[in-house]
Length: 213
Image 1 (cartoon, rainbow, N blue to C red):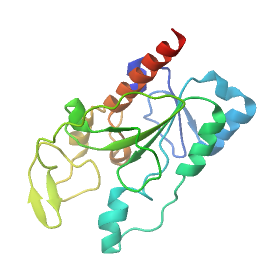
Image 2: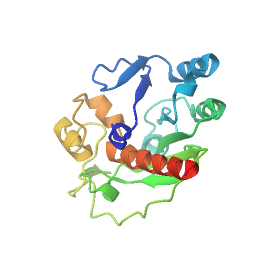
Image 3: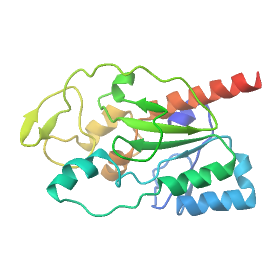
């Protein structure tokens, strides 16, 4: 949605059915689909590729709390395979991952406080074949509401993941992230606020104009 708001035409791909996705959509394995676009030459219809590989393997929750408590299981790490295909496209690209141990360059880090949102939701972005300036990271205004290690704290942000323990309701997640097109809990917990990709899309178009000016 953020790329759309920045003025880009958007196509999406995911392995799961996403009937609420508001743009052109292909259901399937994203790496297989990207390889198909490269092989057929259809990738040349695009000007930018954004990839969000499964983040569970390296995210802070997996390598921190879940690991210490013996929770969760193994997760695929597809960052390297994704980057290899993105390099093969010959196009500018973006790889997005949460804070943690994901093996990406942190060319840009975005936080909900940068956009006055009701979530923090830190996300790191690696850029290929283009670059832009970093945003200053403002000081957080307080805690994320909810229980952490048995202690409850109130605060100006909600936790847009999981259930219970003071975590956000579906309505709260929708409001905090400015997402109106889905009310599916799982989709909201994995989404990033459109403000992030709106900013990136605008930065990309500005950088592209400067190249061709």
